[in-house]
Image: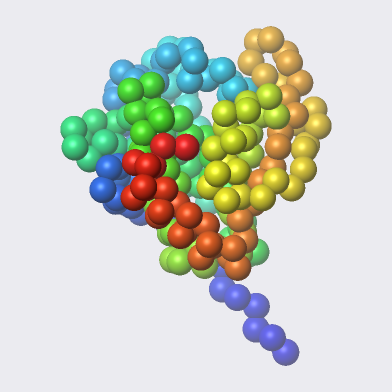
Length: 207
C-alpha cells in the first residue's frame, strides 16, 4: 500500500531576491500599503476595490484571518533598495492534503509596475512552492477582460485551463466576472523556472 504524502507544511516565511523581499504580512504594513495602494487603477479588476485606509486595514485583517485558518499566506512586497512597501501578494486557497495552492491577490505600486519586481516576486513564490513546499500544482486566475494580466500569466509559462463563468460579482457595478484559470504543475516547473530566470537576466524582468 502506498503511504499518503504528509500535508504540505505551508508556514509564514520571508523570501528574498535581488530587487524585492516578500515578508509575512502584518498589521504593521498597513500604513505602507496605504501610501502606495489607494490608486483606483490598481483595483480596476479586483472584485472589492480598496479606496480608503479603513478598507486597506480590513483587507489586511481578512488576509491574516485566512492565514490563521491555514487557507492563505499573505506577503508584503518590499523594495530592497529603499526598504519601502510597494505592494502585496499571497498564497491562497491552500490545499495541504493535495499539495495545491494559488498565487494571486497581487498588486504593485504604479512606480514598480513593468519592472522586475513582479517577475522576481513570482519566481520567489513559485520556487518556494515547488522546491520547499513540494507543491503538485500552482494555480493563477484573472478577470477574463484583463488582457494585460492574461498576457503576463502566459509569459510566465502557465497553461490556460478554462473559464469559470459568472464567477464573481465586481464591486459596486455588479458586473458578473468570468475568471480565467491557469496552472503550473510540478513536471513543468523546471522549464518555467528557466524561462523566468532568463527573463530577469535578459530584460530586467518586466512582463
